[in-house]
Image (cartoon, rainbow, N blue to C red):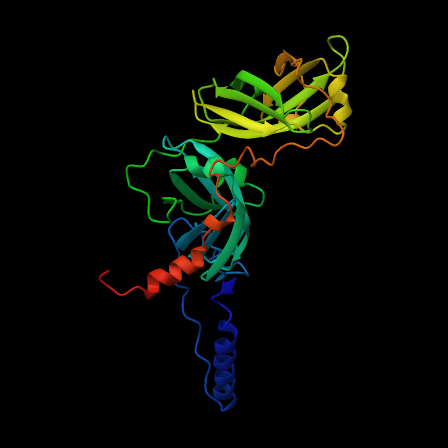
Length: 346
């Protein structure tokens, strides 16, 4: 992080030494001039006759973003930016980043990092945030702003800076981009599940769950799946549970999720009779209740505890949609260098 005010101390020290030398030689100290006008609406000078008369009030102005660069790298987004503080009061809090879809709905809000910018100065920052692949694919514009400590999730209404709207490439967003819509809390009732299928690969310990989840609400909703396995009568506590994928859906949109099922004890597959797939904002961290009853289905007759010594065929990660291996990877920095070295006009 680079701070533009670091060299002010040296300059100020030189000026003070020069003034001391002049006054020491017998020069008359000039009377202080009237304070320069401050912004309209800000009281700068105390009433006449008050001991603190002449004290300038701290002026708070919204911070400004500039020189923003976005570097998506897999599941990470690198962000570099400059913040300018045009006021006289120190600006501090958190730098925030919102991902918005084609309707201006907030997909996700990220805290980039803490910021402190002294009044009248400029500072540069570099931050790294985790990035959901599905969320980034749906992102059409990016919003940058600052807010008070731990206030990013409150949205732009709590912004302490000017709002900067960009395309995912880092270029300015078009003027007709849909206005940002506030992020709404997701509920378990926002989701509808269908097409549930549980498969075991032969006699191995490779279990895969596939299902389709739909957002039946009128706002964007995000959540996770959680598969819970039961033994015994209705209402009995679950014996095992396994997280089953994340999703972030626009109103009316649906997505097919495919993920591995992992039990703490695979031998429990022979005891399980009933399973429920829950879809809710926090997945397995959410409790089952009247609003979160889950999608109930019987364990398929073909699914059992794995046979000792039997291994499944190597398979790719069900969440890997590209099918690429490391041979298809590329280094963005090398790509950037190649572009710079290419002759002009090509």
